[in-house]
Image (tube, rainbow, N blue to C red; front, side):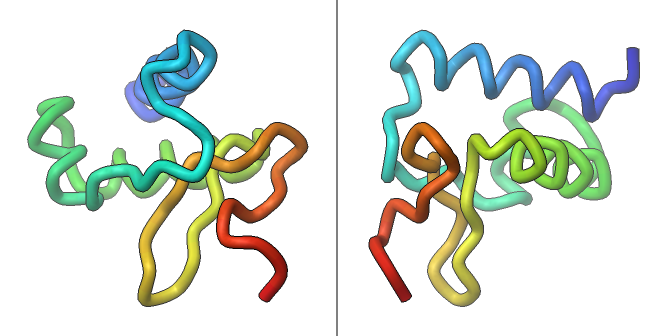
Length: 78
């Protein structure tokens, strides 16, 4: 299994367990890279994977947030 996929699976498990709640903001990419001990590119690929799964939403200039179930934006309509 690729490192980015394992990281995405771990974050998804944290979401499923309720540790990361809908509308809560994820730490920045650099902080996640440090937390997981991976390269910045690995974090970025994991974020793409989580967005594709509908688990997170990235809002330009605001950050990355845990999406509501169904992939809706935690910040409401734009």
